[in-house]
Length: 257
Image (cartoon, rainbow, N blue to C red; front, side):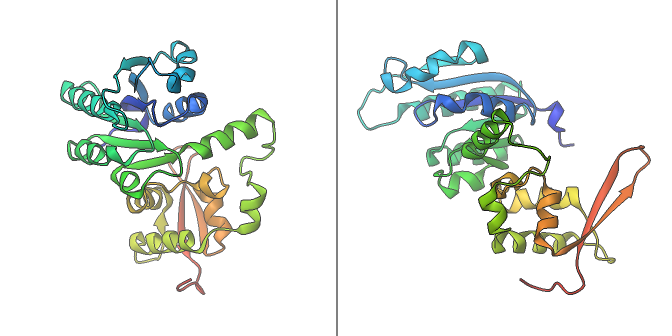
């Protein structure tokens, strides 16, 4: 049985050589949505000025710094320390999920191995992250998107729960994303053509771990789907008052796009 988000105990492992400390608040707020970070460690050469910014935020976020000296110039020894620790944590059985915070493709094999062990793997990094690492995770989150949300909130620009960035709103939903959603709905649709939105969201992540409605200017999947103009949406009552299940199906005149 798969753990719900609130049940997940997460090990958060951060590559200080590869991620800026400026992302810390937005990153930790996002991680809290997926579970409880019971292990929080950050790896780097703390004698180096390159990671000095992290020292100012570690105590406030209860993150344990792990010292890893750079024995050879040009070689990232931090990766090895982080990988070894991840396997030790895995075999301890104390967590059932990992957040690997890095934009480095060297963690691709680690992500694959952790998933093979049956734990959930969430990757967090910048948009420059190579595709192999992204697709090796169950879900991958772009730090730039989190920072954009934090800035909007701080400036009180979000006046509507489905706020869209002006540029993204003007550009509309990319064709490849609309096609991805359409194909996923068709994969899951019953004989009546309807598919449960929750199942669609899960399938989208399996097909493309970096999929996130926020990447296209929408806070939730439903308004993103509405913006495509390709689907009928049906909100159905459940036995729990106030809770509805959302089902979608392609419009009659929708074939391929």
